[in-house]
Image 1 (spheres, chains in turn cyan, blue):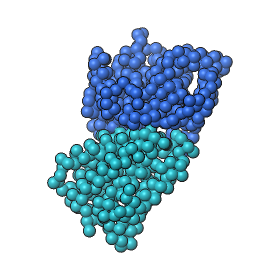
Image 2 (spheres, chains in turn red, brown):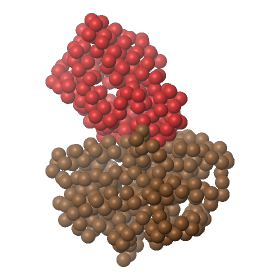
Image 3 (cartoon, one colour):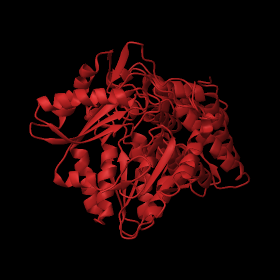
Image 4 (tube, one colour):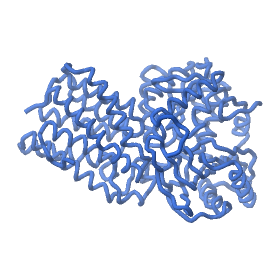
Length: 217
Length: 333
């Protein structure tokens, strides 16, 4: 099984719809430990992305599509989310440059490259209470599922489930990166907004490509 | 939400249009990407000074664009970092051949966006240096956080570096001076009330009628401790003691004292604060030789204040006194 250009486009649209539906929720999470703009910023960025990619229907290069998403997020989201999600998509796009469809291994390579980019840009490590806490478990679950011969649809479901678990596991953590870190101990007890939007991203992939209901809201 | 706005989504754009209309002799305002630039930019042979950050802190940064201070400012959405495309275009617009200095407040988003912009600018052959301002002593444990936030010292650094750039000093000198201002300045703020981001429509945090937040940042983000309201003299002591101990400021030091309104606190209360501050510093043998009092780095309509102290030497004093002509700060020689 592989993912075609139009499937990637459907995933982007599905993520945009999830961000739209969860705009208030993401903003509320951010208000508790940050500056109350994550949902608003991501929604602004993803609507700009939709306007851009709608003009690119009928293209073939998945890498170019992902880079367009990344550049659009960089120039429209602002905050920390802009460079971080922008870098995630830019590096994913670079990893699958020129491909018109993605095999499961291509997707794993793209996710790996994207997460490495986020780590380099944000310098966060697992446990710092950031989007990395959802992304890294999702990547590891995907790799181990694919390595163990699990079908792509199920591997995507396991990856999304790991992202969800990682997201929930941010609740007790004390933030060490980003604006939440200024709260010290007071950041514990709240779910990280960045890990939450990252879970939405991977859940959208599982639902769009794998038909997974895992973690569906 | 009671605000003098038309539509929440239009606040930043309409305010920029207002600035363009009000201060056409000083600045030009570019849209898409948004930045405010000196009307006479680029000034040949002068280091270009670019700063930026979320909107909602007016007059910072756009109100500080003009001769003797910034060459360009990049406003983001309210309390949201601007983006690299804005910073890159601003950098190109102010490059007069002597390089460009980015003055960046230490917030995760601002730092990452300016880093991306500096990479892009260097890619286009422009010499770019960046100095990160991190003067907020409320953040105690910088090893396990994103580090100290950039607050009041930003205004002072922009003024002093602007004067040095006007003297056509080289980029490395202006950047060193910026680091020196940052190294000799410390700040701490407090809030009496929360504030409402227009797009959010609700207060960023809740404070009881008798509660205040000590160690507040400039984005309505909660501070480190919440205490009962107290007389101004006690609050001033709570803010000033950590500032003095951190540098430390010592007997015999000359300082610039900057008492800043978070937006909602009136000047009469700032003077009450200044009075308590000058008495407290006097008792410790610290002389206030320059001051700045008013709303310069605000947090929308939040009531509260911040105190910044900058240890002065002859050079910093001279550069502070140099003429400046901006919408927000203006004096002659």
